[in-house]
Picture 1 (cartoon, rainbow, N blue to C red):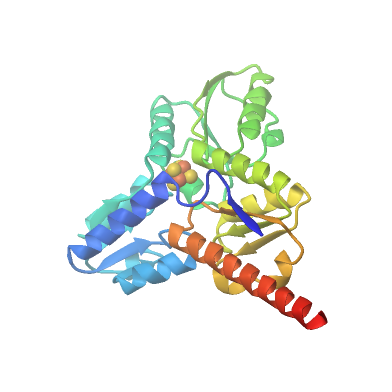
Picture 2: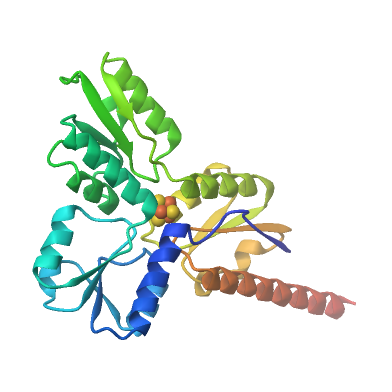
Length: 292
Ligand code: F3S
C-alpha cells in the first residue's frame, strides 16, 4: 500500500503562529496564561497546551489576573478593552489575515458605510469582525439573502475560509441592486489551497484519510470535499481510530489534515497506517504459506 500526502496539509501560518506564541509565553513562566476559547480546534493540541500550563477560559470574567491569549480567530475591540481594564495582560495571536479583515471592516464603518461580512454568523471569527464595525455590520451567510439595499454604497469583507465563488456571488447580488460596492477580498489562500490539494488527491487514490479535530470546521469541510469525489473517506482525530479493514485490497491511500492538525499527529497516523499494511501483508504471507 502506498500512502500519498496532500501537497498542502496541516497547520496553516496563523495557527502555527498562535501556538508558537502561546508556548513561548509559557516558557517565560510569566504567571497564569489563559486562552479565550480553545486556541485551536484540536483536542490533542489543547491538551498539550494545558500540560504547559495554558488553560482555556470562555469569558474574561472568569479570571482576575494573568495573561489572556487572543486566538487566531480574533475578537472584537470591546473584549480586548474589557481584559485590559481588568488589568489582564493581552497577547494578541489574531492571525494577520483575520486582522486585515477586521481593519477593513473598521475603516469602512468609520466612513459611515454599512459593512456586509460574508460568513457563518455563529463563527467566532465572524463575531470578532462584526465587533469592529461599530454597529454598522451585518453578517450574510448566503448571497441569496440580499433582497433590498437601502444605502447607495456598501462595504464587503469575507470570513477568511469562505469559498471565492460565494464572495463573487455576493458582489454580483449587490451590484444587481445598483449600489456601489467597496469589496475587499479577505479570503485566506491557505484554506483554498488545502481544499484543492485534498480534492485532487482524493480523485487519484482508492481511500482518503482526513486527520483533524471532529470540532474543526475546516477539517470537516476537507472530509466533505473528499467524500464528494466518491472516494471512501475517513475522518480521524488520531491514529487510534484507524481500522485495518479500511485499507484492505487498496493500493493507494491519500492522507490530508486540517489547518489545526499538528505535523506530529499526521506523522503518527501515517506510521500506524504503514504498520497496519505490514501486519496485513504478514498475515497474507502466513496464510499463503499455510496453503502450500
Ligand atoms: Fe490565518 Fe488563513 Fe490560517 S486566516 S489562521 S492562515 S486559515
